[in-house]
Every structure is written in structure tokens, then in C-alpha cells.
Length: 88
Image (tube, rainbow, N blue to C red; front, top):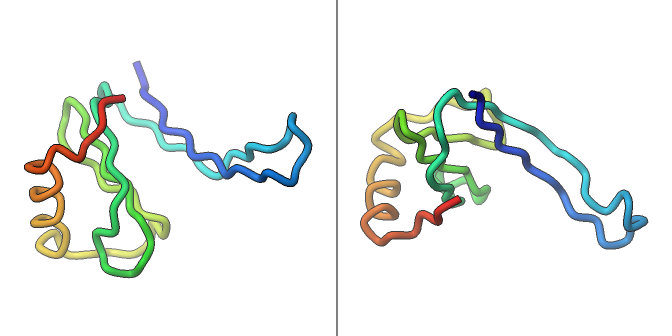
């Protein structure tokens, strides 16, 4: 069964029925255990680290940017060791 991550933008000035706007969605084939938002690339934008039964998936705002594994590996390991992942 596919697991879906949905990202919404909240607009407090909109009508109540339209205050949440779907920005993007991403599907995974494995159960999602935890989510962690942190800046892995140092660009000032938060990336989303998703812990699933299969491993850690990194979702970025700009899906076309490529970053070396060594750049964010230590940040993810540090976050995991500090128990900053939240259960879904």
C-alpha cells in the first residue's frame, strides 16, 4: 500500500473552506515511521527527512538540486541521535 506525504500551505486570510492549499504530495511504497524538517543543505530552506521501513528519504524544495551525501549525512545522524524524529 502506498503511503502519501501531503504538504499544505495555510492562508489565514482565505475563506475557512479554502485556508489550506495543497502544495505538493509524494508517495512511498513503505510505511512511514517518522518525519523531521531541517536544513540539510545550508541554503536556509528546510528539507524533509522521512524515516520509512526501507530507509531515510530526503525530500527537498527543489527536487532538481543534487547534493552530496556527505553534506547532510552527519546532520541526519546527529538528529537521529538527539531523537528529534517525531512519530507519525
